Image (cartoon, rainbow, N blue to C red; front, side):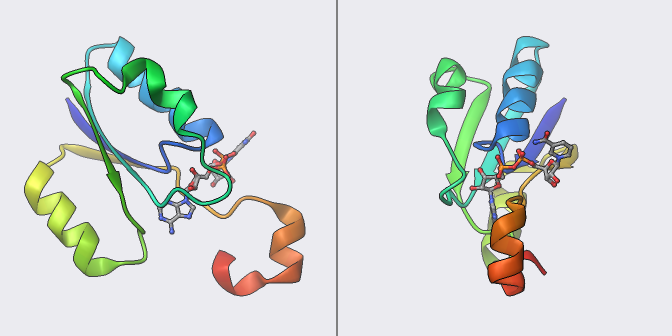
Length: 96
Ligand SMILES: NC(=O)c1ccc[n+]([C@@H]2O[C@H](COP(=O)([O-])OP(=O)(O)OC[C@H]3O[C@@H](n4cnc5c(N)ncnc54)[C@H](O)[C@@H]3O)[C@@H](O)[C@H]2O)c1
């Protein structure tokens, strides 16, 4: 199955990316690469022919439309998030 995973450079998303590739799925990873991202976590699959990465913001409708049209995923696993509680108190706008 071809799965589009958002936030695939984050803690949870990168684990899902690695697991999906290990189980034989194709993965389209879309991540904005914020302070929370770590591409090292998906380095082990970066050269896999079933893996493709797009740096993109899920809030950018036009960019997401382009990626969806280009990659035609069969499923989406949405793991992109602003996840740090302290930051949500300092600046809730980004979290909303
Ligand atoms: N970490 C946990 O133990 C845990 C447990 C249960 C649920 N969750 C949930 O899983 C989700 C992911 O958590 P995490 O710990 O992996 O967070 P994380 O902060 O480690 O990763 C989030 C990823 O999302 C990306 N991102 C942020 N905004 C984006 C945007 N606008 N467009 C594209 N990418 C964007 C970041 O660059 C980062 O790579 C959250 O919804 C969290 O609440 C996490």
